[in-house]
Length: 266
Image (cartoon, rainbow, N blue to C red; front, side, top):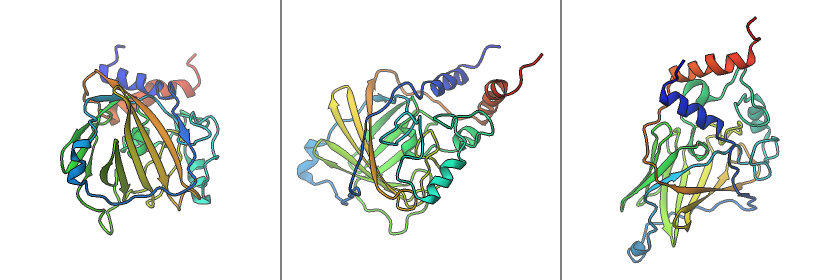
């Protein structure tokens, strides 16, 4: 049976997620989030992040275990540890095709901000004076990052949170709060709560290499903050329409998962 192009691409990308580890480092102090409005004198120094960027595969944000070969090493609270142990992901040390409860794989739910940096598709920026838009090829998601306001005092809890940003020299800094607790931070099932506070820092390493440093602070889920870095390469392929389809996910379950876990037909 010849598979549709979109389903074939999705399966290839899922298998590629572990292809490239990423660089991580520990952080000993909580990330800071000064609310800054870009000054007129700094406008000329705004870094240009235009173009498409390719995301390599990834597994875990654990600084000691980026491939997710072992779990429970992050400084988790009992609440988070219980959540992790209940997760049945398709990747990492607890990978399984049976009774998977990955909300993306099972329901096509949004992956969330940090997990988006692990799906091997492209992304791009649209930079305007008031808002920077981050466009993701995977699922067709986009994030507005406001440059001229503060967070609401009581932000609604959403899948992608409320993002504000500013430029610091050659860095673009994104501060995000207001998440719900329905997503995982990575592919292996590490959870987060609605208290998650993210700081993402983007910078050019060279013309064709972009680095993002992601700092996590979530007192309900983790007893200490931590930071991980990811490296992206410039892509010369245009962004395509890549959607998560419940029909395709069900076909993948029927054709791959069930045939792998079930007894072979006689």
